[in-house]
Length: 351
Length: 288
Image (cartoon, rainbow over all chains, first blue to last red; front, side, top):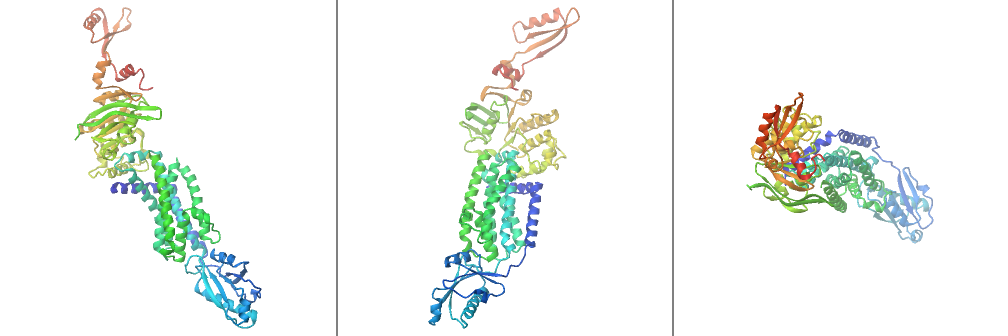
């Protein structure tokens, strides 16, 4: 391996990247813009807690126990209630049993099931139990003894509610990576069009070493900026290792996409055209990952889903390796496939 | 050290139905300049690409510095220098930065970019961005890049094409210096005068085939005829041109008669050019 040559080529690519005023400006402005948008977004959350409930029997109106900051919505079935809580539409769900009235009348303790999303704090859980008991009291005029069964739906991640701007952090980070992807694709395209690549191909560097140098440039440009951004917005406060690894693997995967874009582009304009198409596709899962309820199963075929979700649950929920390893495996596999395809297609263009 | 720098045997390459290089055989000796001549599309550049590992031959074999161009490209590429026909420099970088990059790629440590730039007539211009260079300056930098690692074989593809006389002359000087250093030079050109001046031997390539291979002197001896051209003063004071073919049995007598019977104004001998010979052999000119 000609490490000296690879290093020289990588250094040259970094130099040329920042010689390109368009990409130099986009890099700086992009970083600043995302930082400004992040800090302009509200840092707090709406404190109104939305709670869903299902009851198979007629119960007194919940308005009697309506408290400030609580809103109750009724569901037709327990399954619908579960789904809504699982998708994050409600902070909690209450499912009353069919035998509520008969059990209470016979002195037995009916079991009320409470559903929580993974990010429900303990204070919400205890508050909800009190709410149910208050509800029983206002309905019967006396204290009602019930058992509670708690079930967490979705990932077992414990945290408080997430401010909107923190939910957007992974999106901004991936946007930054994609910007650098376009820069790398443009560098490669220019290298092909100006035929400087021919000079490299007849040097002692082999094709694999040239790809390695380009890969280091791509991953370096992309991940350094994304990590820098995440560090500035506090995205490395929880599970920093997972965030860093995810961004690194994601950068490698998107470098593969840069190779694919470069293989079909003839100039900077066509890089932009193909790049924007890729960007749109890669950003589709963002809605589903960042805004629960907007997700659809088919989004998981888009590899950026695993990057966005890994960064999201690590940075915002403090997810551990056990939570994200399937995502990272999917990311690595898709990265290998995309990078392999990118190298393969681009290598043919090198000939 | 192998005796020959390049040995090509039955080398061939086709682009679909077009036979670009049609089973050619030739050798390039050590410290020899071989002019590879032919019109556009004759197969010169395709041959260079095969010899430098950019294209894999479709048939035949070529050994460069003793290594097969099919199996040992990597071993060859560190020891050869290539100056491409089209300019392919990093234009946003300076000349020094371009040279330093390739010095690192070739693992050259004892390298002084200014000294090299001085050799090609770019002294004091090393810190300028290449995009501000003229075509001649860029071509000189390309030559400098191709020799910075002291290659054993130098491939030059139309190195002086379209250059001003001064730039062309400085490149020709470098080519001769490299030959004197011990490098073998594979020179492709359609500039016959240049090939005649520089080459120890020349190859005539036509439609992918070698139609002649010898020293320029021998080719002229074999195919060209030398003539004596004289201008004589006529009775009415005008000038008339006479030609006498040299090397014939009656030539001495014809020359004697020319001077005895006429008032000779001017006289000079003329020999066939490589271009004339190429046309004689192939029936087509180099510019076709």
